[in-house]
Image 1 (tube, one colour):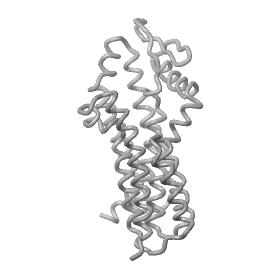
Image 2 (cartoon, one colour):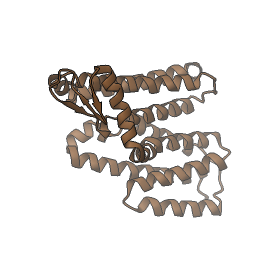
Image 3 (cartoon, helix red, strand yellow):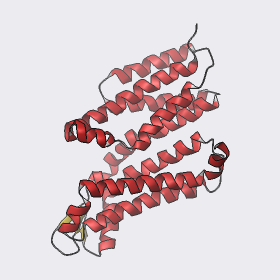
Image 4 (cartoon, one colour):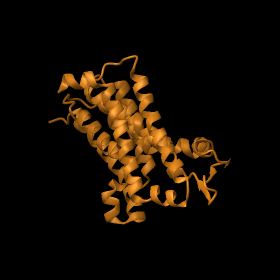
Length: 267
C-alpha cells in the first residue's frame, strides 16, 4: 500500500516544526525553568502553536496517492537540514518545502496548509534575521515613538524618563517587530482556515491589526518611561501578561472581523 501524499508531507512538516520549536523551548527552559516556561508556553505565542497544528492538519487531508521521485529527493534534503540540532535550519527547511507545495500541488487543502506553515516561519526565522540586519533602525523607531509620547530627549534607542529619574533602554525583546509578524501570521491562519475570499479591504484589516499592536507596545513602553515606579509595575510579570493578552486579543479580533462573513458561513 502506497503512502498518501498528505501523510508524507505532513510527516516532514511535523519533524521540521517539532525540531524548530524544541530549540526555542530548550532556550526558554534554560532561562526560566520548567514551571515558568511551561505556563508561559515556552515564550512561543499561542498563534504559532495553533498555526503549526492547523498547517499540518490541512496538509494531512490530502489523500491522493503517488509520491514523485523528486519529492523523495526533496524529503531527503529536508531531513538532512532537520536532523541537525540547529533550530533555524529546521524553519529554513519548512520554508522551502512550503514553497514547493504552494507552487507544485493542486490540492487546495495542502496549499492552504503550506501557506500557513510558510507564514509561521516569518516570526520564527525571517523576522529575526531581518532584525539582525536592521536592529538599530528598528529600535530607534520604537524609541522615537516613545520619546514623542513622553516628550523627553532620545539618544539612539535610549529615552529619558519623564521625571528625569533615569533612562529607558529599548531592548530587542521590546521591539514591535515580533508582534507585527504575529499579526501577519494570524491573518494568514484565520483567512486560510475559513477559506476567505480575497477582498480589497483585506490589507486594511491586516494593517489595523499591525497598528494596534504597535500602539499597545509603544503605550506600554511610554508608561514604563514615566518613572521608576511605573517601570517596575509595567515591566513585571503581571504587566507583561496583561499586555500580551491585550495584544493577542487585538490581533485575533481584527483578523476575525476581516473574515467574519466567511466565518459565519462556516458556523
